[in-house]
Image 1: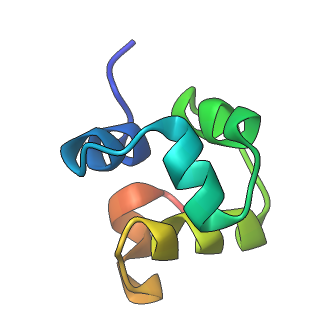
Image 2: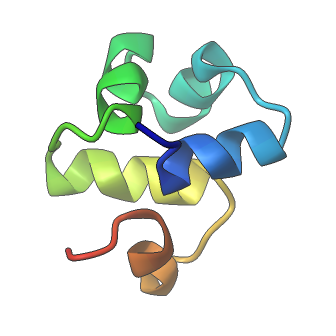
Length: 66
């Protein structure tokens, strides 16, 4: 399975899962699940989008189909 958009963006920023989790205020396990394509709450998506430097209007770049 290829990388998803969250993982691609995180690695492009040279950011660890732990660092993204800390910036987003979620657990590293949550980041791992999201990167594996599991679903998460809308609030979690919002936190990840902002932590990766996107605007909320760009959510389809990280979470297509939502």
